[in-house]
Image: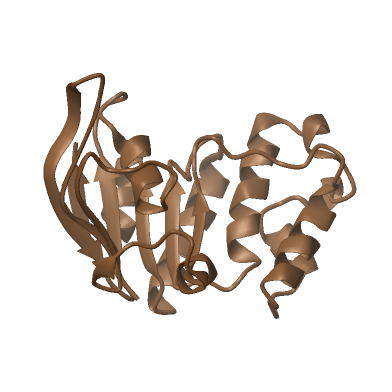
Length: 201
């Protein structure tokens, strides 16, 4: 599997955010998107998953122009973006069970909960969680479903030192399993440990 962009450009109100951008992450590769706040990292990731539309250029999935509505794309790509939201009346564990069921996943929901440190709050509703716990829920939702491509916007957000160490190991394991990873990050150690290439905005 591969996901990337060719000669991509995007702007707001006629002001360019990025232009002439080309890269791809293939199976077992990780591409880190880096840059200052406001440089367009989150916007680029939204374009990659079809949540925003490029002004110019093309998002490429498996070397062909992206059809965000295709079943193959939706089955392959797991993402956590900066605007993640959850059902307010569905518990943490129910979120994971529902997504696992929808994707016919063989992942052990309880094991994923334990891995991200949410076992103690499994029966709580998202509005009762801290921002860090909600972020971990977003990561858990990526890991409880099958995936060939993983798109993450600053996955290190609100993780402590131990959490960042776990995240590094998890992303390295994703690469070893053949998953293509694209992630935006401000964590230089995470980028150095995980990324095969960097895209600077």
